[in-house]
Image (cartoon, rainbow, N blue to C red):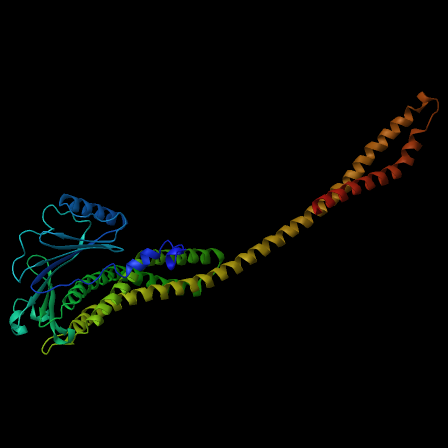
Length: 425
């Protein structure tokens, strides 16, 4: 009999969940090292194409190919290590190779044969160096107005960046090894690359917020104008037109909110990951320089607040439109009820008139039918001699009037009562 958990049936997702914690392990890394990191925006279709292109690249170089549903893959290529990762809306390629600060190696995986899976969003060059010179001497090529410098790993490393593109289009990151332990450089490098990627993606919400602000302002202005109309509008048609206007405004607002919901939600998530990466590095400020945390807080916080403000304005405006529409709809419903009541009163009056007309017609019908029947009886009396006895037509007609009239009246009432019973059913 089998012992242990292997004798149980595994959940279909058990392996995926267990392996996820090992999906992106830190890698051992030592100076000098150059790391190139790219992030391309990809949807579900582009992500599959990116995996196929990576598989073709690996096949051309005789390397192991990624699995059909793989979300990350690592191979040795062009003298360095290429790491590929697929995320929800972007795909990253990271390649590191032994080298010092200066020109890039002539042979990289991102040459003319490389096919980008989507639009480029992040391009980073990170240099890991071991140097004991003063930090200021190593940062002469960086923009002093945007420079952020911090100590990490208890002072055994220094990180620096001005977050600007160099002449090759890369955002430059510098990591100075001042005595890293063997397992410390890799996590610092990976967190810095993720930090730059996620802080860039977090800022994607700002253009969306800026695009929506004029539209939200226009809807707010029209809501104020429509509220003023609400106080003075009278009559069913005027209120109905106003309700149509409010409904149209609500539709425009909800369309914009639906379009921006994913972007704002993603920006919040990316911003939180950025802060988590900063906290994980346990940086210490370097005298004379801004720390990474302080620099990014000063630059990112206003953008994130703008996104939050626009999202809050959307939600608040949606509630105001819903309240105004509900009040106006109640007024329209009341006026419609009054119109329906007036219509019912009119229908009742018509029904009473029809009843009176019907009663009049019934009386005339009784008289007309009785007249014809009495006439027939008179004709029978005139021809009574044919059967052997003779009746006076005048007397026969006179005696037949009342019985015939009563009989016809009773018959008409009987027919009408049956019709009334049928309508009641």
